[in-house]
Amino acid sequence: MTARALFFSVLTLPAGAQIDPGRELNKALADKTGKKLQITAEAKQRAEQRTAQFFGRDRDLAADFIRLRIGLIYRPTTWIKLVGVAQDARSAFYGLPPPGSVRDPHDLQEGYAEFLRPDQRGFGATIGRQMIGYGDTRLIGSPQWAYTARTWDTARVYYLTKKARFEALHISPIVPRGTGFNRPILGDRIWGTYNTFKDVLGATVIDLYVLRHDQNRPSGFTGAGRLAIQLYGSRMGVPLSKSFRFTAENVIQRGHVGPLPHSAFGWVGQLGYKRTLFGKPVDFANEYKFASGTNPASGKSGTFDQLYPAAHDKLGHMDVIGWRNVHNVRSITTLSSSKTWQWILMYNNTWLADPRDALYNAQGRVIVRSPSGTAGRHAGHEIDLYTNYQWNSYTISAGIGKFFPGEFVRNTTPGARSRLIYLSTSYSF
Image 1: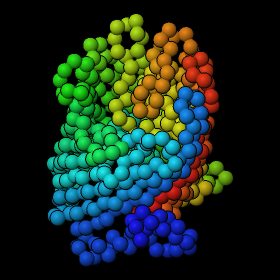
Image 2: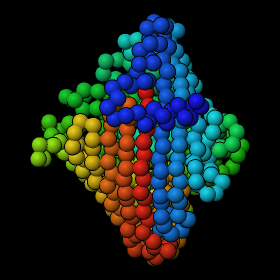
Image 3: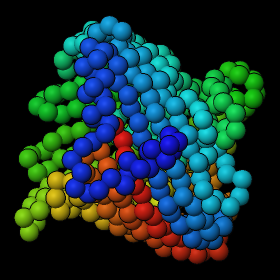
């Protein structure tokens, strides 16, 4: 039996089966190796149909995305961890030569060494290729919803106490090539410090960070057209009571984009509330987001740099719009019908911060622009309903989403209503 056939036979085990193959395998390995060796694996499939993509500007898409991973974790001593993960991502029925964002066969997803005491105190370091995320992953993350999932070449040094983590980092995103082995793009890098403080004035968590984004892919770290942006940011998570919580993040940016001076700002605030409805737990969250845009007449760059986030669900389940030049209102309601089954209803409403700047996609690239600023501000509404069911290491997900264009989109595109329908299954350990 091939590796691919073995993975997907696991997905079809009878519902009454009580054996989790991955857990049993790692239990046996732990007994044989003194807990030094562990295997990780993932088999994930998502069949989806996207119609009227980007409001009718792109072709309809129906494909079955398949991602397989297998990895090893080896601990030669209590303070050293070595990790290697191979990934194979395919896109059956895609119809056209698929880009690297949906197809990345036979590649290295992770390969790193971590040095840290077993009590997770004192100095530590991580070096190598790794999937990472900071805070709410609005700026830096590895989106697992994505077909290939971003990974990073990293060098991180940190110091940990019971209530704080101080970290210096230097990271570069890996862009899947689709063919050939993925190589680092060191002309695109983020470096600086990201620090987290827990149990401040109660159970409040505060992140403080100063980061620098340098980008000049064609010619390394120097040369004309270089992007050099400093980010000064903070994030706060505050439990207001047993039921209420508040989260806020703000980012100030200074620097330059090519010859233009850069000054931008982004802000997020969320208020959440938990209660019981008809005997079932329900979580309500309402959120406002802002990211500045550019007035072309100003002679300056003012479009917020969203870096490389794990952007899924941040501005809609369909991942149409990014955190650049927007006002966004999001409401999300999560009903837990059981401990393993959730139903989520999400609503997003989005306007442009500056009507003369563009509407950007989830990757931060331009969808459409009205240079005169006369097309209006309202991008549109999105409504999503999706569900996740988990049993041991198995997960089944399904959902539907629809985007209803606003004035700006209707005036600058064919104005079609974009739609997403999908069914996903996965097994991981």
